[in-house]
Image (cartoon, rainbow, N blue to C red; front, side, top):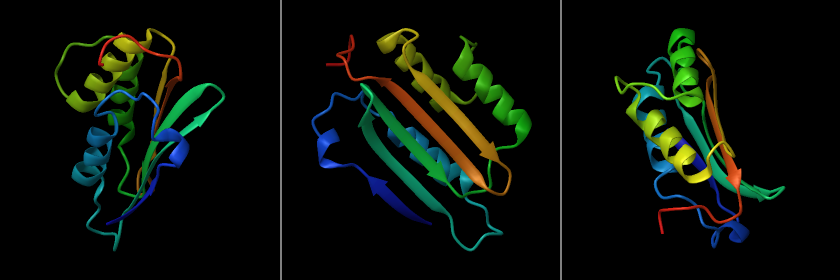
Length: 130
């Protein structure tokens, strides 16, 4: 696979919760590589706009089956008992702890086309994780 990273200079000093992107990129590699494709591309970055930090991780991998995507949407939307999808649940719980309801965690995917993950939260200081 190959990758593109977009971390402009203006985001380098922003306060961003630790280890948000690592499990997302890891999931791209572990779950997204499609042996029938010659190459997968991962595009990841952080932007600051409209008073929010926007984090994205996109891949051109095999995509997420609709029934799994539905489960992931449930994980992001509410509290759930730990059974699977630990990385996604952990990220969502940390964002909820730090920002209350003032964050967005969106996952979209299409089989054979890849997955897009977008996270956004306010630029203002958050509680915890110094």
